[in-house]
Image (tube, rainbow, N blue to C red; front, side, top):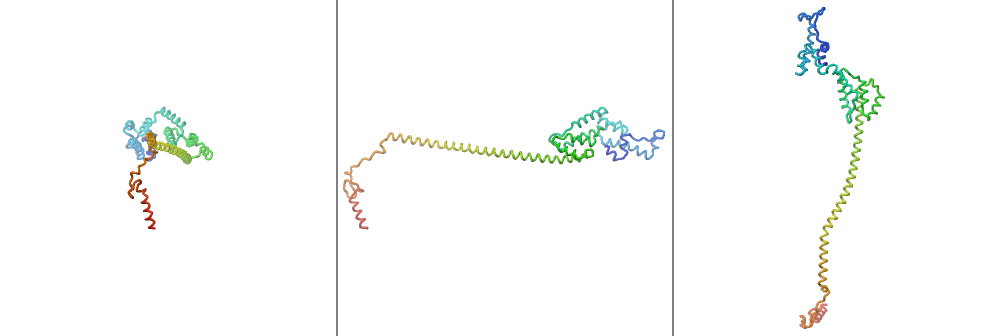
Amino acid sequence: MELFLRSQDNDMWTVITDGGFVPTTKEGVVKEKSAWSTDEKAQVLLNSKARLFLSCALTMEESERVDECKNAKEVWDTLRVHHEGTSHVKETRIYIGVRKFEVFEMCENETIDEMYARFTTIVNEMRSLGNAYSTHERIRKILRFLPSMWRPMVTAITQAKDLKSMNLEDLIGSLRAHEVVLQGNKLVKKVKSLALKASQQTSSVAEDDVQESQELEEVHEEEAEDELAPISKRIQRMMLRRNQIRKKFPNSNNSTRTEVDKSQVTCFGCNKTGHYKSECPTSRRCKEKLLSRRR
């Protein structure tokens, strides 16, 4: 609001802080409007413009609080007391802000930008209450509350640069650059740990595969034994039956055929008795004669 009012007129913020201009005579008597000069009219108009700008920026609830105010200074003072509180409340808020500033620390896994945003909020709040911190004080505070892993960087900055003449943005830029290095180291360590875990998992998987193959072989052997079991039982049954048959017929395999009485047998070759045609002597002689003739 201060920036906006100053952009409208150089003297408009003076109207807010010191009050509006009232034309008076040399004796201190308020002039009538008909007696105002052009410059006096312009200065009086600043008060109306400032009040108009403030009213346009307020909500309905806020504008109800300042309806009874007669000039822009009264409007501004009423709003300031309402939002900032009285002097006692303001001192209490300053005390709380100073405490926040003193105990401020960088959280774990917090980036430099996130930390600086929180720190800037506290500093701006203190400045709005009239208790501003210098650049040197803010730089010293930031270097104090950094974690222990930042100690080498803090030592390098304090030894290489003059903190009194150092710019706050230069400090934040250096810390951001170092943060990138730290994140790179963390990434490398993470990749190595992941690779180690992957190798361990691979070895464990290989052991599991060997164990599973052994278990599968055992299962296959058991299944093969289960399949051969009925066959072996059948063979045993067949062996038992054969032994039982041998016991019932002990001389069945060694028994000789009964001899036939050849005296009653008639040869079909010579029509004589006493032999078969295959045993006929005449037929053999005929065959030998025929063979000798052919030769």
